[in-house]
Length: 194
Image (cartoon, rainbow, N blue to C red):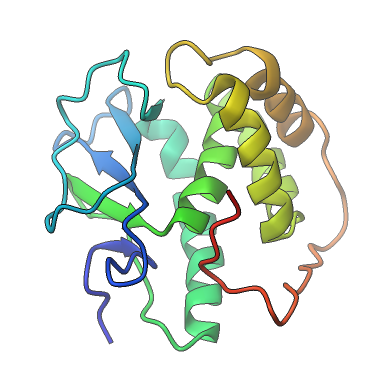
């Protein structure tokens, strides 16, 4: 079964709130991927390539080389949860394009991207490991706290909660196997925690 829109878990019949991850056509590592939060669905995939740096809904600009480090583990985590709920698996665009994420998945992805935005590539595996060790609810809570104080792409970078998230996920390696916590039965996969 193929998802209705490219990305992970976004269904406009359930939510008008979503996140758009826009990939440039160029595959050079220094190119940036942008994540924009959208609060209304207008019926088509947005073109966020021209969103200004000071736009309040622009959450991050991240280098492709950093995103490539997290793309597969994030895809595996999201698809594991989608498939467990009988929903179609998602994917990142192969070259250029936009992936739409449900509010929950967008928040979780942003938490990880904020942690690695100013991090050497060598520390990204620590961040992934620590991010996977958090339950979705913990990721949502950390996203909410970080977004409230420093959620804008430019003005929030390397400050406050964003800096704290980087230290917590990148410089705090955990050892041993990842033990995934199960979400409470009554909690919906796509419940918006705001």
